[in-house]
Length: 438
Image 1 (tube, one colour):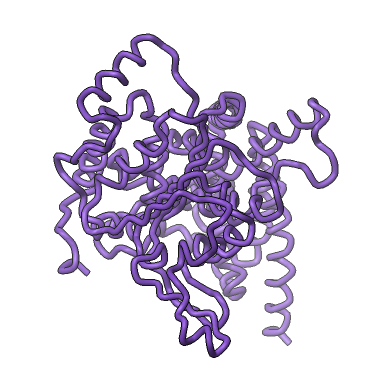
Image 2 (tube, rainbow, N blue to C red):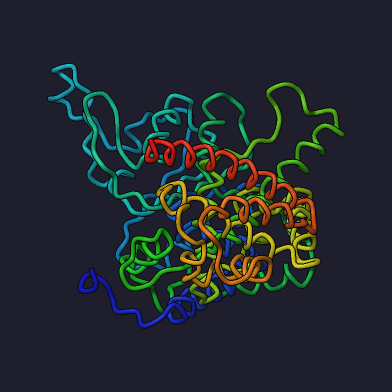
């Protein structure tokens, strides 16, 4: 609701506020601009970030300085250890309830009621405790025994010096959509700048010159997820298709690399889940928002390595950028993107006809009112004239696909899918029209 948040006049105003905050963090935590941008994307999309590095690289300073830029949110901070039990994170057990055989946590002051969490050395925690954390991180609910209550948790930043591999830790890693490896920088000038900052602040987070209200961050998340009533960030059908092709090509490159290294054994292939792929759309909108735009552009797709790779690992990042560049160059050449748009518009036309088969009994020109399908109907007019007799509609649609010559492999594959969709649509349409005739 507008009355529950500070008034924001434009997407550009939001972007400037975030840019200023990121710049201030960057002045305190030297040479970490990419991880800072990744962290802001995690906060904007209400996801979690895992930071890995050797000791003394400044993970804690980075996390605390990021959280220190927001006002009106409580931070839960803990350093994990093997002796800890779930009540360290969820609050102490209610003794009266325990006497009755029920496990109920008193969540006041715990991670459950915090908006932000910083978990240091997260893999030092035992598997029992980590398993208990999984539901809270994923569903934002505390579910233990008879207790089932919602959590205020927005985002967690966790830090670790090492990765511990087990069934539980693999599930835990899946909860951290964003991951970064922070490598020590031995450049003398960078070290000099770090020393300068240390002399001023002693390795502690600095007070922010201007804090962003947490309710505004929640509003930004609503914009990104399409739940805001004042702003929206658009993604075209062409951009969605391009994004999915880039992701699939990256998946192929990763698995080919594993195969070449002899690491691609059964069950160990690199796999991007549909859930992660869907969440990449939120990241695209977050990247557009950070740039002050109300629409996603091709360059935003190039930054999807924020969730599909471990930022800081050059091999993974380079591979994603290669996938992006390869697909972009292929579709840019010879009007590939234009062809993708035409074919996707054609599938929308088929969906309209499938939903109402009676439309096949009227001239196709009735569908040409929207600009999005103009390219198809320009072809119809050029090929057959301005009006089509009703009984020739199917032939017209078939002829369009016959005459459509893809300019690259990506478009060729899309055309194949569209041809299958057309065949399936015509089966449904003819069955429904036959029912009407009989």
